[in-house]
Amino acid sequence: MSRRTALPKNAFIGTLLLAIAIARHAIADPTTAPAVSFSRDVQPVLAQNCISCHRPEKRKGKLDLTTFAAIEAGGKDGPIVIPGKPAESALVKMVGGDTPEMPNKGDPLTAAQVSVLALWVEQGAKDDTPAGSRAASASEPTLPVVPTVYRIAPIISAMAWSPDGQTLVIAGYHELLLHHADGSGLINRLPSHAMRMTSLAFSTDGTQLLCAGGAPGGAGQLDVWRWNDRRLLHSFTFPGGDTLFSGSFSPDGSRVAFGCADKTVRVVAADDGKEQFRFDAHSDWVLGVAFSADGSRIASAGRDKNLKTFPLSSTRPAEDVNDAQDPFTCLARHPAQDAVACGCASGSVRVYKIADLLQRSDQKRDPNLVKELDRLPAPVNAVGFSTDGNLLAAAGSGDVRVYKTQGWNKLADFNGIDGPVFAIAFSPDGSRLAAAGYDGQVRLFDLKTQKLEKTFSPVPLTER
Image (cartoon, rainbow, N blue to C red):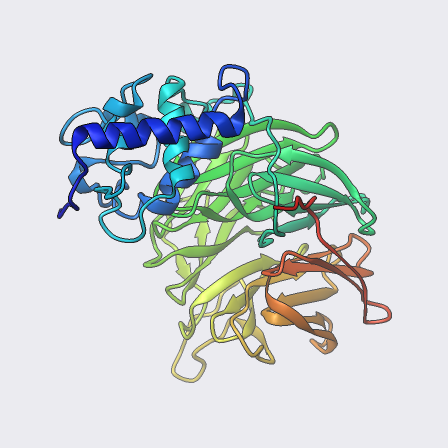
């Protein structure tokens, strides 16, 4: 590993102390201001700047920065954090000064980011990681209490409509934003350990809300909320190098399945996060996962172009569903049938059956394909069925299409949206569709009139 020229020791320490002083002034008295949070403040800095080289799969300098335990263990040269002593902690020293030694490649950390690390170490380098990250504990999780401040609307990566139709749940940065379903105002803000949420899903009985995501380049996160009183029941962190994808409840709500960037599909218990099944049949990121209608199997789709099913009650190997043609980007299961809709990188939307599978032959290369819909002009970022299964929506770049599943005729085509759409959600009665994505705006479409009903920003914005 090559290193940049470092400042003389005294010059570096002076620069570091100045950074700490500036940060102290910015937040007032650090003894009375909220403590710097490892999970909310420190991990995002490391994920953005350091984890590409210092993660379990790579560990340059034998150093892993993806979890508190790994940071505490240090690297080949020993500990990198000395609580209470930022000027003596390699975690801070290596990124500080006018000519920082790290990151070895890319832009150096900003003064504010260095200050976050320095203040965290000065305040004792405490760990507020959810208990689930250390032992999949079901104990009461702690959450950050300082709400996120937004100066621009964030990219929206996930949404869900509450089963009673009254609330639209929208993924923000380290929080869930609960809005009145008509877009008339913000109801509540629920803090989350996940920096970014890739999927939101209610249990079949509507009593629980699952949030899957994590820190890109860092660790995965699962949060399980009790919906009636908005209480976080369980929070589990999964070190593995990246976020989790496509979280899905089993029909009885006892299990959670999700896809991973390490090419695996995992099934864990919803109450304690303990792994029950792990499947390694994919050769690339798994971006779509769902239980079968009876909960006995898992369907998964990935960037390796494969759609597979796995039985949960036997040791039988995975079965291939499709003829591999196109990287899959997302997946949704029909609410009552063993059929899934898969979005593809080419813009195609393909519907497959995932039960009573037929074997491929020279005459029929894709026998389990039910329907291939007209191609969107860009990769499909999200697909979803209405609650009754009568409608299917697919979203791409600036374009959302809605189809009737009876006959697969197109019902509506909403285009002209600014940028990619990453999240869609049908209202429980199927009369409206919410769509959001890159521009940070939520759009409500009336499916009866096929017109845009309302556009709103889900976050409170603060001027610079």
